[in-house]
Image (cartoon, rainbow, N blue to C red):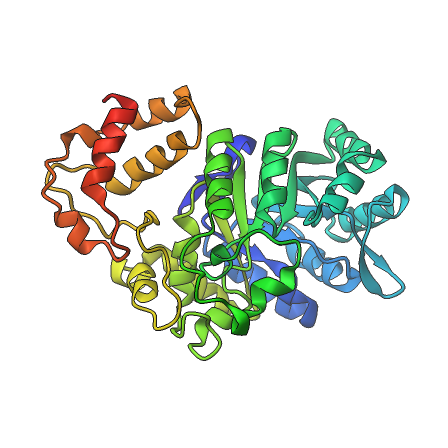
Length: 383
């Protein structure tokens, strides 16, 4: 297992994580089997947004004796009322639910205290402009939560969180189908693939901007919905008309800027193995780019660098994907950020070394004019 730094939290989290939502339909014994297999394969980050007391207790039982081996994302604002999940900013109800989470998980702290599910301006105002935020800050001051995060499906709200400065990391929904959609506060739209317009042809600029903004501000991302609920595994249900594998979906997510861990959902220990197979997969097995570039429905990413790495090898050993990433980060701002330039200059080879052979362009699935971008990058960074 490889581990990545989760932004300014400094936590080193497994590239493949555990989104535990599916554990709601399993016995404590089945839950323990999945978690044990994940731990044995090197997974060390778990998300528990669910308020159902039974699944919390099952996870707590599974974590008994191994709590210190896991980083837990626990959500503030996810409550259990009248036998069902209710999202709220009522501090009294949030406190009761969060204390229940601690008790059932058999822990006295949560590594990542998540401001739960902010998708609209009204959600933002309710959470960030009142006593709810004071409660979150109190938990942080007491050490009950070690870091403050936020979950959202809407890149506009993610951008607000990054620019606000309080949030250290985001739980964000990422997969190639979602990335084609403009920002919306209606999650159902992301799954309404029958009505995908043919004009949807690449990564939406707001989503691309969010990834780059997170990288620029050192706000790490953990990923939810990497498989789109399994729809991307089925050519008949995929908006692209082709099927992807778990390994390809995970690789797509991990090539987005700022992404540290992909929190896949598992029903069985075998599902964990299918996801962790990413760590030993070949380049061909990880290759989502060729599949999407030649998909029968919807043009994906034409002319845009998706940092997939198909451009390798370079005759002068330029890491083209990283150069393109730093160019995109820098070009977001009117003035090149010093930190981005420093990272760029730390590369072993720079864009100015490009000999414009264009062999990389012949390998790019998305038709990126790489030689032209190398020239622009050299001019931008003056190196």
